[in-house]
Amino acid sequence: MTGPSESGSAPIDFDHPIDRAGSDCVKFDARAAVFGKSDVQPLWVADMDFPAPACVQDALRARAAHPIYGYTVYPPAFYAAIAGWLARRHDWVVDVASIVALPGVVPAMNLIVGALSEPDDAILVQTPVYPPIHQLAGNQNRLALESALVWTDQGYEIDWSDLETKLAQARLFVLCAPHNPVGRVWRRDELARMAELCVRYDVWILADEIHADLVHAPHRHVPIASLSPEIAERCITLHAPSKTFNVAGLNTSFAIVENTDLRARLTSALNRSGLTSGNVFGITALIAAYSNGEPWLEQLLRQLQRNIDFVVDFIERHIPAIRVQRPEATFLLWLDCRELCRTFRLDDRALNRFFIEQAGLGLNAGISFGAPGSGFMRLNIACPQPQLATAMRALQAAVANLSFRSHSTC
Image (tube, rainbow, N blue to C red; front, side, top):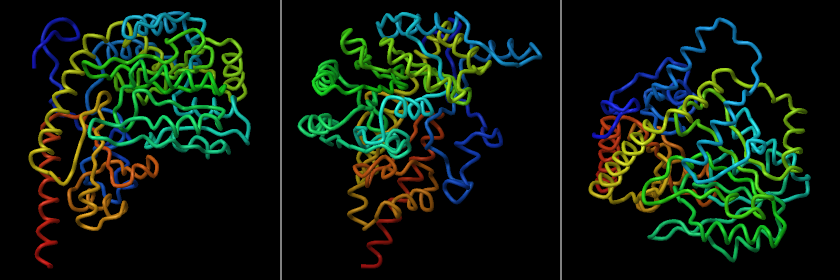
């Protein structure tokens, strides 16, 4: 691996293994609760098995040296770091006054749905989609609308006729961009068409752009609110350093809300919920990451591309019963196991158990992303490549064994 390091010298070794078990992390230490056994190789929840940038670690150590960790304000440097990052990485110039500090993207989504809609309003999502997005309407006692994305050999596409029909009935459209789990980076023309429909039918846009920094060349993320002032007026954009810099446990995120009325409604909801205090270490990490973490991110993106290339190539060569499309963003691969299910008569429960019991792998079951996820599994590739190689060999052997047992009983 070549390229400058975070400090401009040696490259970073992302293939160095780090034992996370026993660190109270969900990915490893919740295995028994989630998968029924503690010895599966966990390739599920969307955080990375890589250390956070040295600049973040150094900043946290420096702040921890002060022995008091009391109630904390969001300082001007917090907002300046966010604005600088969005301008440099996404060509999006935002006024710091439009930035609203939040405790996390998922709680913010639920708070926003409650603040911007009434119980008889409909919330539209594009499935298959990240489970907390899929569950938003039900969580807030709203009507749920789903527009299923269409699987093609070229990647997932939008069913425009269905989307328009559903938008005509909706109050709020939740856009996942880049999309989790299918890995699409929506093109500018696609975003413009979605935005035009939202304007036509007077629909608010809640954009989850938490994976925006993890886009693979030649694709480029376009914030939907950056398309025009008219679109920005109906958008709330959610973002965080958590996926980018592997600091999800610090529970620090933010929203960009240029519409002053929407911003006031969100701020009021935060105040009513008592969610206005900052996490001292989350604030510190955000400022450090957005100020000094770009060289680390560039190396990370190269490592993720290497891992994606490895897994896609391995599956295409050795496990033809499973199909995978190269993601345009994220560190998540969406495995099409429908042929495997048809061949061996596996339902979604049996498919998940096959990965756990036969392959020894803990993935996210596709059905948890909505009905269009039936027959799919989501694989997290953000770990040292030797661990991915072990996982792929285990999956290859499990599929071969499944085939052998099937033939031996005929």
